[in-house]
Image (cartoon, rainbow, N blue to C red):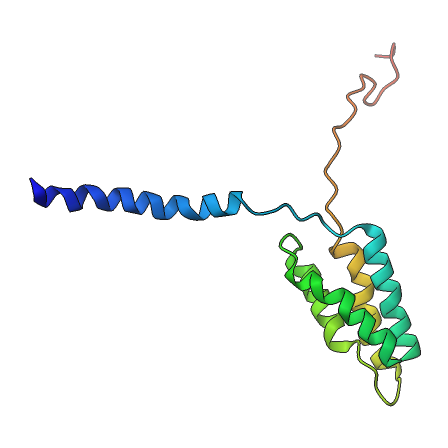
Length: 136
């Protein structure tokens, strides 16, 4: 009878192992998406970095963009754009068109790929779908 005890405990332990991550996930704090104005201000700061090519502006751009890499709800496409911006938003000796474009390109994508996805609204079910009422 004692030999059956380990056999009965293993499914119980397996069940606990499966449910433990769910319990941990349930306790995570809700982190909202960045607002459109926050994304837009980062975008404008990145444009300024690409245009002016100063250490102060480019450092501020990277400092503001860096926390987005750890944001738990942002999609991969957003983090790719942020990563590209972090790599490119550095001052250089010669501000070429290629360098400016390498900063402006991910900055343009920020407001599109990092914004909170809009929930689809319910369609208005109106009876006049195609023809005016009274006509057959």
